Amino acid sequence: MRILVVEDSIPVANAVRAMLERRKYAVDIAIDGDSGLEFLLRDAYDAAILDVGLPRRDGFEIARRARALSITTPILMLTARDGIEDRVTGLDCGADDYLVKPFAEEELVARLRAIARRATRPIVDQVTAGPLVVDVSARSVVYDGKPVDLGATEFRLLEFLARNAGIAFSRTDLLERIWDYEFDGSSNIVDVYVSQLRRKLKKAGAGDVITTVWGVGYKFEK
Image 1: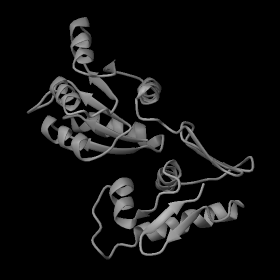
Image 2 (image 1 turned 90 degrees about the vertical axis):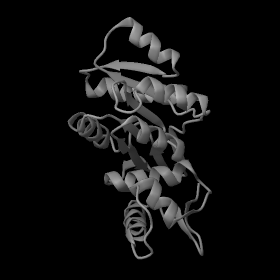
Image 3 (image 1 turned 60 degrees about the horizontal axis):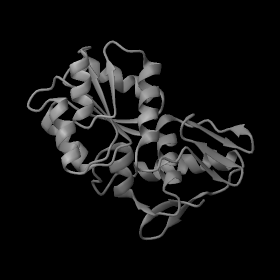
Image 4 (image 1 turned 180 degrees about the vertical axis):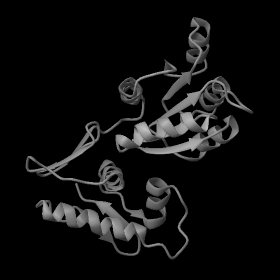
């Protein structure tokens, strides 16, 4: 999954990022309300974590504004406030769930998965291509019953392509969605990771499920 974290405390934001990246999630961070709303408007996320107490625009306002603009990204409010009024306010503004600091990593991840499953946008939990199984929830890849060991970036790349099977993505698209930076015309990082991923899948016996679309980029053959 790709998660947006809007948190003005750098230590907290980095801690949440570390928790999620350990689960092989892709994470973007915004440190104030205005930039957080811009991220939501610009990109597609599986879920967003919004701190209530933000400069410029608080979490309540971000949720309210996002819903007014028809943004359906699942929202988890993250705050130190434990009052029932704050919880009600957050939910009334369009948040899907509410988590009070401090929290356990397992609870954060479980709540993110829960709101993602409840989202109107369908979430693919598992993608198969013959004996190859990409399990998005378990963050694992198995071929013919045997696990395929992938790094975090390799998994995100395979997950993204598998969840969008049959659609060709350019190198620019993949850089923006997997690595979160713009294509400068000279970077070959996409080709390098696709090559590594193909090699590991082929070694496991999966063959070439990632194909090259000449003049475009790459796609996953389901």
